[in-house]
Length: 75
Length: 167
Image (cartoon, rainbow over all chains, first blue to last red; front, side, top):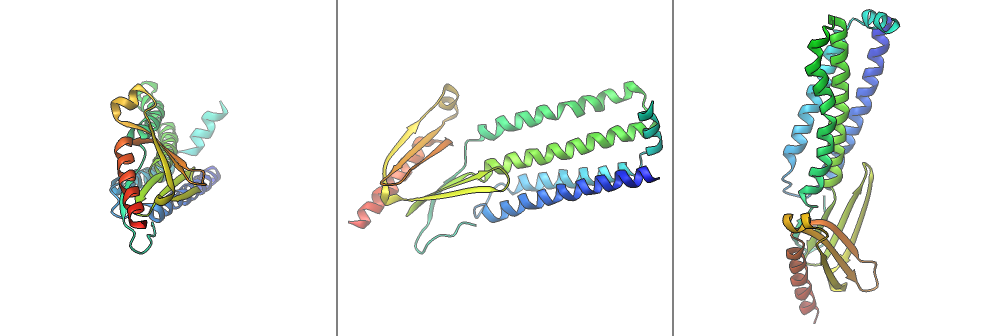
């Protein structure tokens, strides 16, 4: 159980860092892109993949039997 | 957003040629191959439930990082922009994620414009480098811009208008 909490903490810290970087990039884009910008679909595609991958990684994180993984790592 | 002076209008704004970002994205596409191979090879290893999810989790985290790398590369390409207005040329250069350099040159101070087509590929794909020399200033080089000769003609046309207006 403690392994799961530890890994979850690491993963959520990683996700917080990840989304801070994503927000910084989006801020740059909004701040410096030209009016009538035609590349909004790129931002949409990136955000779609980032959200889907984030949600999937969180879902799978809770499906992993960490005791089994640790046992395998010891052998 | 770009702030224009009174009576100023944007004539043309351009980024680097798409080949610049395409070559970087090819590297990203190559980085996507290892997780794809791992996903395809996973059934052959007969992994148990917990380990299967563990490898899937590692692949997802790897894909998250690659997605961010791709976006950083695209933003680096896309936020490099040259804007020609009826008054000045603005050269905006994004350097990495947080560094930016913005220079501007008045059209009335432009002295010399040179177009350079650096390679065979550039000839075929119609892109090149544009060197602009200005009086008393450093000038600038716009690298890998599409239809460099047409851009040069536009700048010269606007320069003439500016100089005629000043007379």
